[in-house]
Image 1 (cartoon, rainbow, N blue to C red):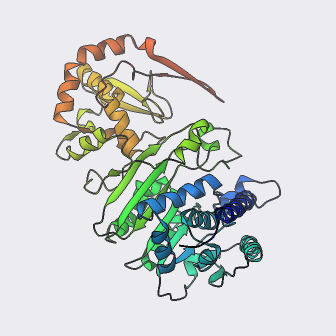
Image 2 (image 1 turned 60 degrees about the vertical axis):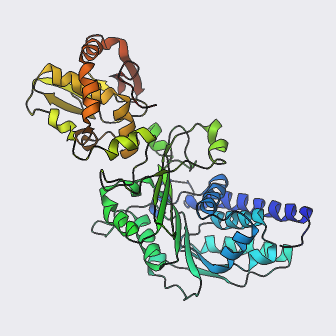
Image 3 (image 1 turned 45 degrees about the vertical axis):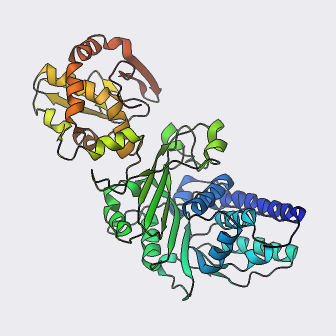
Length: 460
């Protein structure tokens, strides 16, 4: 253990807190490179700056998942790994890493021994990081002799051979690739290159769009991750009411688009027994932000999940059990009758309830049934907490797609309960005016029916 005094440790930690704050402010500027701070400039580079609190949570969670708890753990880990930041920005995640190392007990000299490759296509960003590192060196009479700064595109950069295990980390650019590219979004290129270079003992730890967990565009990438024989942990975060990235999208007035990206923190790490772990999609208000980012998230073990090819975000244990026992069940599509005269109109977006409309319009799914009893069954199913929790677990957190509805499994026990509630469903539909909710928008007023307070509730 080092022999430095507690006062010294506080000064060291304080200096790193300042650098982390500087990096946060600098990254906000780097996210908007044009003088007017336009969304177009930010979108071109796919920049979402990483806030200081998220940066610290990012590493706290990595250390917890990889069982690095004390000084001996971090000292061994520090000397066995070569850290690679493929899209460094202003270095917020680098300085957060240093700060977490100090909190566990590393001295300035030990921090400075880090083997680190810093890559970014923006030379200004790299210069900023160099300046901050230089300030630390002068302030503490230390030398970071094993940091390589590379102004390059990570996809084409050849890493120097290292005897150490590679740890790729970062917040790669979220930006659409040209049509015809292997992956729809650039972040997937960064992830694939990282996992392919990580070898048997490598780690990956990235902030990514939550679509990596469910989108068909990345199904093959999820297969690659599963095939590594390593453990995977994914913690997911919504973008309403609060969002991890406060930068937002300034050109949008729509609340959902004006808030920032729905995202996740993906960790891939070697373990004796490979597991896949996933949290629910976290939702929180601004006054809950500190608690969220200072508390360990709860992971569900989804290693045996085989309902579809995604990494679900289980809303609770009950819905995970439901999905684990429905492979042979009929799907909601079995209730549908093309050309049926009895219709349900379901809103194609949701938040806290599945909305029903009175008639067809844009943004509405029209579901046709052969008879009224089937329609009422459909109403009871889609307004139940089981369907809402299912959608929250396998949907994108905003859109209610046709596939979300049609693929919903109709477990026998669940259908027995639903069928017994048909009289209640008839009353709900007959008295639907009591369940009206309205929402203003630029083009007028939208009226929906929210039956969640009267519908069947089975999940705890």
